[in-house]
Image 1 (cartoon, rainbow, N blue to C red):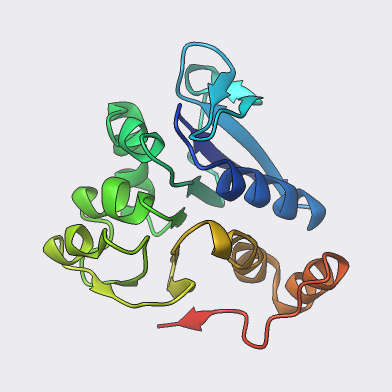
Image 2 (cartoon, rainbow, N blue to C red; image 1 turned 45 degrees about the vertical axis):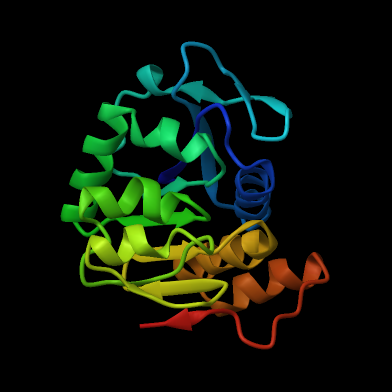
Length: 194
């Protein structure tokens, strides 16, 4: 089974990261959390420390990953944006048409400066839109936006919808509805497509 990755840096938004990990695993998707720190311990923006599954330096090959996922949170998103190897990986993955998902501040702080959102429909945490627009993104006030291989979310309250949208894109509507129903989550409309 192909393996997806979610990247964690100190200051990450706990709800966004842990919801994605939990929901993708409930859907049967293989996903690992990756610490960009020197140790597996990563402390979130609200003081919750988690042990990531692996260190960035331990992963030999990200090339076959179906999804690379970036949670928001501050200064977590900034810390991820300052990780040069991760930025190079994201640019290469996007150039190859690989799937990338980012939520909250991450679309503006991580993806936009890399050119990944240029000409794309997207959303992000309110107040960060200007950074995305400056880099050529078309911004929307929506919980989740899907533009081909890029999924963006606007913040913690949309974390479950964001994660279920990744499941939907990877495994289809039925699996997303099955997982959402098991969580007692019944959105009228799963997401927004462009």
